[in-house]
Length: 79
Image (cartoon, rainbow, N blue to C red; front, side, top):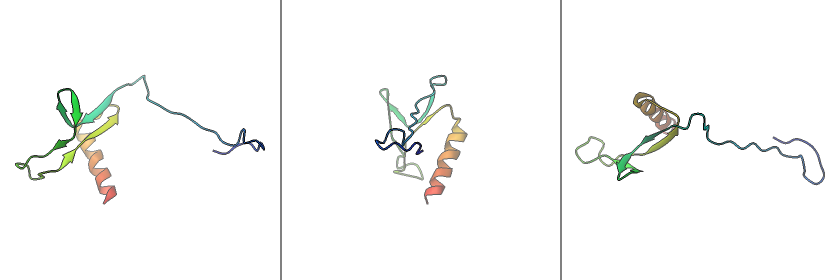
């Protein structure tokens, strides 16, 4: 947002910094846990989607159904 009109540039821009909401410091993670590290999960050859990989990180709590609905919606928006 541009505000002000100082010749030296002071007051010409407004900046807002945001960060995590530490009142609700939870995240939802989708991936494969390998020795305490979350990594991309890749479907094996026995799955119908062999080689397909999943990895996601979101702030807040999300149920399995909500997470996969959001992923499907986002994937549809990209194609």
